[in-house]
Length: 383
Image (tube, rainbow, N blue to C red; front, side, top):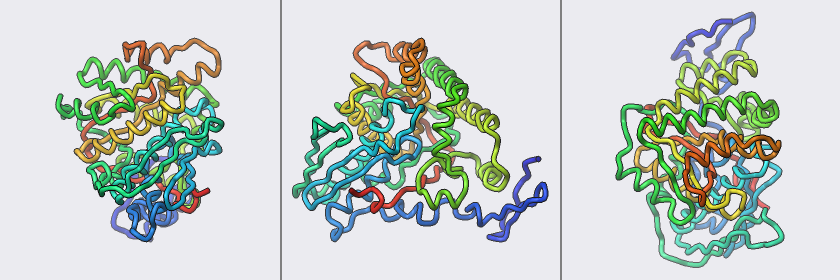
């Protein structure tokens, strides 16, 4: 079957007829890419005075997280919020030691504290308050404080993972690179590769790791669990990887919605080709490093640093996208007790025995806006 150019402007009655089947535009959300209940949290993200502490979760649930698995739970009182990792939403073979899960929980914690300050609280954070349970990620005590509506807070509803092409001709200046690395604070150390040779070297590691993930059936199966490629799935689950947030440009996105799904092999080829193109257009490739990526505390702190970096980038016209394939493969190598190919490659890129990779990513100036991912409502993540 050939991919066909879709007619524009036909409204909700647009149809594509191919191979005797009919796919209706409205049934796949072709004209409503960021609408419906699954996307309401992005427009209702600010806490209202009557909401109290509970309203702060509206911002927390918009945080970056792995595969849009949203692996968090909250317990809320008037003076305290307890944050938990929801280990039932783990990524399996793609994240065997829950590295990415705790990084995502750290991102939610950062959004939560930014929202608390904007609402006039002085949040006091205790990481891992229960020595008997690493699932209890943080406790946030809330007391009155000055309102601080920061640039990072205002960027929360605009921050999306941008998987489209970046402006490869536009470099990141030394001042911007310095600001990006500084925003991590004491929580992590950011390494940015900005010159062409460094980018190509780091990008080659990511591409090789992508090929290794594709070759690993278990990792592919783990990823497919979070695919939401039908509009009704998106609205029902309100999580996962969607066509709207993944496929560029718009014409290809429309075709992906309207035509029968690709085979696994076709999907893998598409992902590899897209990864190569994404890395080639990046102005920088980066690594979030911590002292011990196996420690839940360092993962949480690294997640907070990543969230701040992504928010700062968003506020200053930059786009960002995680490319965690090297760390996913490094953890998988440990799990299978095989040669640490990607563990060594990451160590060589970092060049500091005191630091280890938590996650890898790309940065650049976008050529098009990113679409949001669905989000579960606050009521679904309360204990």
